Length: 119
Length: 109
Image: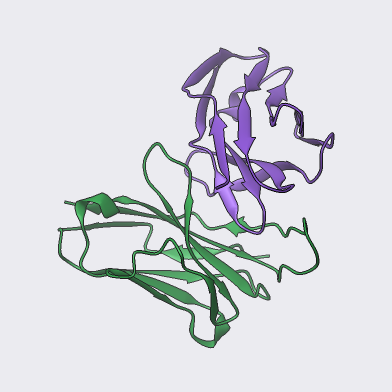
């Protein structure tokens, strides 16, 4: 079974430029997540999609970050304009539908990430 | 809010040594607890999990027990190998994953 695919793997841009990342989740996974992992920190959830609807984007800096998941499959995350502090690894993950009562959990499968350097 | 605090690294060990990585958490309710591992050049992978108090998660010789009384989920392995060199993340979930900062472990032959 193919895993979560991300591209590009590496990107270097100057501040104030724009950049986009692409993610293709595991086939059949309805839920897709974007995380930001700054060096020396754990991943932080930016946005969660359920099919093509947004479930949680409370930690997405909406003045410069945007994400979409057209047709409920692939997703793109965009930064415009980029700042130095956006330098990080951007991880995409996918999972089956979470459902059920309290404590129910579904495994998230992570892609290899895109390492962004803003100079 | 929910948070996870894990032992700072880096940790360097010799092969066959005993490994412990401490993890404590703060949460409302009854979260599930996890250890994720990131091998060099690879994506994050789930190593083990525990979904309720006193549960023990285990995989690949690693173990961790969900201790509600001490709000801890320490990771242990009795005899590490060079192939265990990786970054280990403790995490909790109450519908959303919250990760610790990660601990880099290097095992030398």
